[in-house]
Length: 352
Image 1 (cartoon, rainbow, N blue to C red):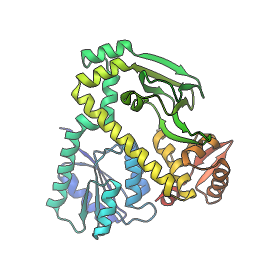
Image 2 (cartoon, rainbow, N blue to C red):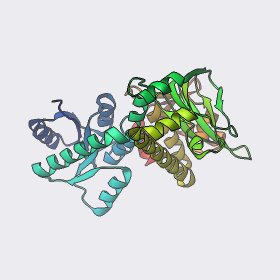
Image 3 (cartoon, helix red, strand yellow):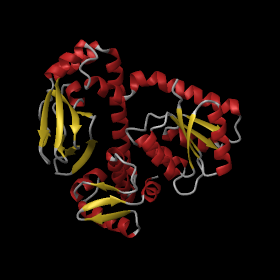
Image 4 (tube, rainbow, N blue to C red):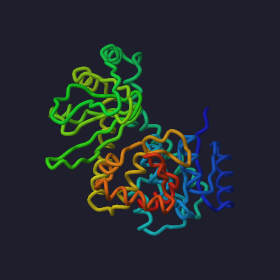
């Protein structure tokens, strides 16, 4: 039987080793990290089944680690348990609001620790078959699973879009759902005065264009290719037929929609209440977490200044001034028109 893989993050070496030894003796495969930054890097490379993390750490603390994990599409479904001496009600509430699954106060007993881990792993296993967005993508890209999907695959069209090409525009009638095969897609909305707001960034494996199709309304936003992209689309009829006939796909799709709505709500709240610096830091990290494929220290944000401004809800001139400040503070580098994130920790701290 395959061992469940746990990631343990704590900057106290003695406690880290003792806890790791206990979990290894209990039959788990353990990876350890002595800093929040190292823990995030390990999570990206190893995709653990569960993460246990201290809160009070130098540099990137536990709250920062949790925010990164929950904002990354490949990591957000991983169960996350805080292990900490911070046992005040306000600390507990903050952790739960950020998305923590459980909270164990130090010192904790062996039975308490193992019980929490087993419970969260069991819940995650039950949830995965129904609620992971990847489930929907797996079904949509596997023509052999059911007759319905075989029919769907036979009718799917694949189109290559050049950079900047419009996929659909505001006012168009939705007749299909889109699935990104390669590349990056940007969805944005423009008001009557010409102000633009980026409402979505999509990469390989992502579905887009479905809310208005389900609502039977014209598109209110526009989708364009950020780079040369390969996009397949599924007709309205076939997509609705799939949802009506496959219960597990329906559950997965409902979860995907819920996650999308929650993400957009958070973005709008941030644009309404956050400072300029915080909004721009959030925009940079949103792009980075969405499209990072390797856990490198630096990642290049391949957006124009105008596109970056629409993601952060600010004027281009204000964005340029703030990026210059970030560069002077060592958080980013500016290379040939590209933005390179060089210090994730500082940006994460600024976003909090």
